[in-house]
Length: 162
Length: 457
Image (tube, rainbow over all chains, first blue to last red; front, side, top):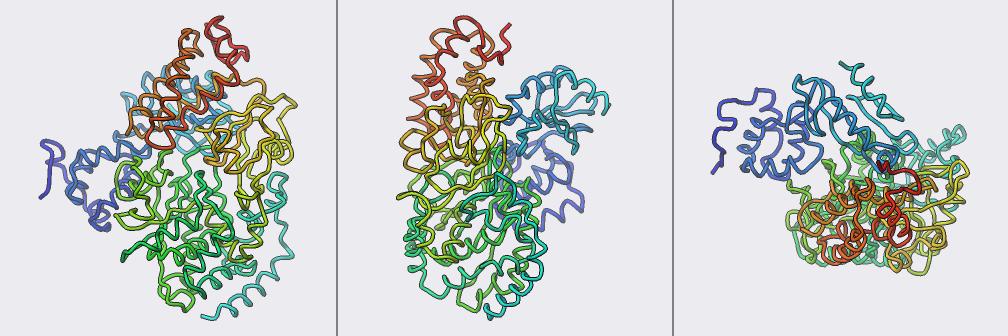
């Protein structure tokens, strides 16, 4: 039996291309994370409609999928802003002031880590990048990295992408 | 398949390129290790060219292993004294024996390349520079433990490494080293890549299994051990990347050669990532039993900018801090265990005199609080409260009873947490209190940070 939550994703359907991708995976729970990874890569986030469809495909409840998708930092459950600002909070970056950088971004944009601004321009996420030691603190805007950041460079950086 | 012919052709090809090789990677001061096992080919061979690996002794270990009974393969590993490099130091031969003895139609071997510690990149370098040394180890391990299918569980951010593995697997299939009847023997085997979705805890073996089954990466109780009941309920051997690269070296050069390196109970070498305020940050491979001082000062070149040493953290964010007087401790499983330290992720972070002990502990706990899987109360609530208390102290609102609370509950978490992550999460706090109690008191009583790191208003 398929389990389905009320109200969520009842009317919206996946498009042909998405359905084709989904059906490439065998209908086994072990493929849940690879499926989520594929859609995260394509859409940059996992929408409620998608969760409902994946649930029906794998015969899992939406709750179950939310619990998995919410656990791993890789999966975003909200649509990201036009520009995604990733602030590295690894041990090295924290020591060189990463916490302050995070606070300045939060203050400047009026949102918290994991959220998106009202105009959908920016979202902030907390990450831990590999091997920053030497260039800390590091901030990435989309794929571009900015090293040796300071709180007073924050405003400038936001303006550059506005 | 005639392996001798393959070997001959490979050697001929290697000879033509060898003289043009400058091996810049291996010439770096940090990399230049006296004994190299895992890193021996890194920067020397072309990782995408299987012939380079074969010409340097590659896959001769697999040929030797396939000629004998799985039990004899395990006996050889037992003789070498190889222990798991993932941190716990469990004898590899015992894991394989347990799996071999289990009665099951399907058995698995998983290469654990999930590196959660952001400061560590050993698996990344091994797969990027010498993927076949790990893959040969997986094949030998699979044959010895009776595994029918192999997996490589690797960080999804390691795109270069994943691409190298894909190429390597294809070359192996072309040469008959993978698939049906490996090298003409009766051994059939396939390897699949599974990308992890992040999370520090996913490197713990039971959490890794849950993640591969499509669940949250929370830890499960042991026993039953994965070698008895693992992935999808089938016996599963989980070995670290570095361990597997040592397996191929043991079969290429012999168990006697391997057991000659290291100490009485800890054999072989270990790769460390040197970082923090050190002159030469990077990867270094040292024999087990080398002291922390030798690693930091001889290989790492000492503290950067001529500053004095404050503390050294071994084993990643859950590791404890060592001070100057403890640096003569040899790095091997016994000494680390005895002194309450861990091998952990294999990182060695060095901090100079400008660092604040409370700030260091706070940063570790802020990271760990976010990475706790949330399954048990001790770890979930403990790491959060510890992070809050330490933040209070660094902001000048610490209370006098805080130190007592940290010490008392620290011991409780060490006893009560479900897995090694939680048990070790308090290490940074307890060790900094042990060594730098006066700094904590200065923050709490006088609202001053002696290192002038914490901004107390």
